[in-house]
Length: 394
Image (cartoon, rainbow, N blue to C red; front, side, top):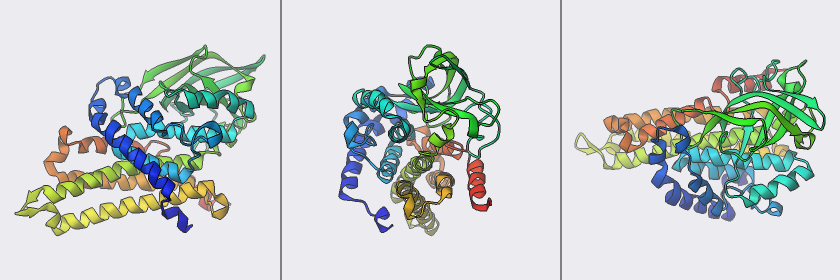
């Protein structure tokens, strides 16, 4: 377990590449993109293409498929660094990185052969997962006995899908979607749903509303609409009716990656606050010379470091479950990281005083971005209940 907390030479080299990418390609444009009124216009294909050129977009592909085979711990480290530049960019890439892992684990050999080369070779090839619906947002986390409203009916050679998903990250940008639809209407979504691979240009599949979000604006979230959308049997992942077995393959990493994303925002806020405290004068001396500010900065650093340790432990154990995986690690790291980040951001705002309220300083953007993860990737109260069910059920 000690190795979890020590960066390897390979990880250091990867992280330096990511930091350079963030410094040169993300930070200079994130503020301007965030301020665009049209939510779809906040997204940048140029950033995605530059991430591909740097090897980030495909890093979780195995060497066999043209990636570097980044493990979950390394990926979590990378996501934190991306989020320090912009949380939306981190979300765009984190979704793609984790789903590339999922495809390699759960897709059939024929599916991998068909889709992974396309993903590898197209610098704009992003991935999305379509689960959330207006009335089933938390149901699949616990899970609840209610079914998905998106239905798939068996027909000759495949399935006819009707329904709608919303809040889907990369929803209007992805080339390939992992869609979860109800295939057994007599049972709940945990026992009667199926995972389908749906290509962007599939007839009967269209993009609906692009959500206008308070923060995390460089990532687009959108509605997905299915109107008699035909998906062939060859695009079923796993066994019909066992979609949740597919989800189980990447839920652990998904929670750690979400936690790493919001941690990156908190680290950015802490670093800005530290710099501000060293240059801003109040009461005849720098802010950092005031004991209350020094103590608060120390607490901010502590919270970030504890979040990181929790994330790294969960990420490493998700790849090495035999070393002591606990199911609560697939729920609680994001809760802790997002709650801690919210404290860090509110304290950072106080340290900046009136300047923290001004858009040109950039702190209000970080506050809006951090707010997303009180709900994103599972509402915190839902995740706490999920963990409690793991802990206290017979």
